[in-house]
Amino acid sequence: MRALTWHGEQDIRVQDVPRPEIVNPNDAVIEITATAICGSDLHPYNDNIPGMREGDVMGHEPMGEVVEVGPEVTTLDEGDRVVVPFTISCGECWFCQRELYSLCDNSNPNAEMAREVMGQSPAGLFGYTHLLGGYAGGQAEYLRVPYADVGPVKIESDLPDEQVLFLSDVFPTGYMAAENAHIEDGDTVAVWGCGPVGQFTVQSAQMLGADRVIAIDRVPERLDMARDHGDAETVHFEEEDVYDTLMAMTGDRGPDACIDAVGTEAHGTGLAGVTDRAKQEVGLESDRPHVLREAIKCCRKGGTLSVPGVYTGDVDGIPFGSLMNKALTVETGQTHVQRYLDPLLETIEDGEIDPSFVVTHEEPLEKGPEMYRTFNDKDDGCVKVVLTP
Image (cartoon, rainbow, N blue to C red):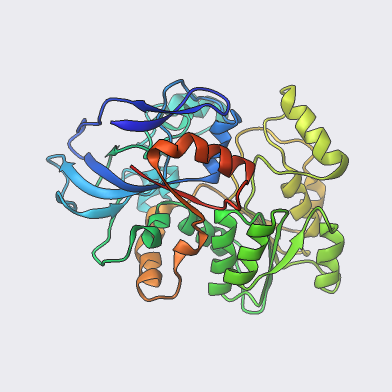
C-alpha cells in the first residue's frame, strides 16, 4: 500500500509499505477514506520528538471503512464506516475503567522505554514516536487498529468525511482543553494558538459558557478564522504585547482561564524567544515554553491553566513561583478521546457545530510531502490539511 513515511527532519516520503494484517484477535483493519495532518505531526516532522525511526508511517487522524475484523471483535463488522481515535486504549485497565483512556496501562508495547523518560508510560498512539508504541499511522491506504472494540466510533449517518473526521483528535482535544479550564458562565478565556486545536478550543469554550474568548496568534488567516467561526476577540502577538493587552481587556485582573494550545514549538518574541531557540539547538532544553510562561503570567489569581499543547521533554525558565503564589490550577494531558466520541458526534449530527470549517486544503495522499511543507510553513493560508488515499 501507499503511505507517508518519516526519514528524518522535514523528510516525509510517499512509499510502498506492507499492507497491515490482523495480528491479534481484537484487531480490525480499516481502509482509509480520509486522513489529516495534525499540528502534533510537525513535532516529528521537525525532529523535535525522540524515538522516531526511518520508515515509520505517519498520521493519527484517520477514518474509513472496516475491511477485516479479528475473531474477538464484537462491535464492528466489515463495511462499517468509522473514525479512529489517535489514542490506543485497552478498555479494561485501571485507567481505562476510569475513562482516562490516554493513560492506558496496556497499549504501549514500549512501556519500559517510556517509563525511563517519563516515570510511567501513557497509552500507545498511532503514527508517533516509539516511546509511545511505534504503531504505524493512518496517513496510508490501510490501518491496523488494535483493541478495535474500544477505539473506533461508527458513523451511521451520511455526514461527509470532513464533518466527522476530526473526532479522531482535534475536536475532542479542543473540547477537553476547554473542559479542563473549568469554565463557568460569564468567564473570560484566553487561548494561545489558533491552529486546528485552538480553533476547536475557542468553539468549545463558547459551548461551555464562556462570555468572552480571546484568541492569540500571529497568522492572519488563523485569527480571521477564530473571529469568523468562533466569535473570538483576537490578539496578534507580534503587533501587541500580550500581557498588557490582556490586562487592558480584563480590567487588569487577567483571564479566568488560560489555554496553551501551542506546546513545544511556540514562537516567542524578544530575548526569551531567541534564548529558547538557542537552548533547543544545543540540546539544553527540548521544548520552547514561551506560551507556557506567558499564560502563567497572564492568568488571573486563582484561575486555571489548561495545557493541551504537546510538550516532549524538559522546559526551562518556568515561573513556578508565580504559578504557586497566584494559586493557579493546572490541567494537562493527551486527550481521553473515547470519552468524548459519542457526545461530540451528537453535536455534529444536531448541527450545533460543523467541524469542516477548519479545512483549507484537500489533496490526494501522494501530495502529502508537499502539504507537510505548506502546513509547517503556514503558506497559502493553510490551517488544516485533509488527504485522501
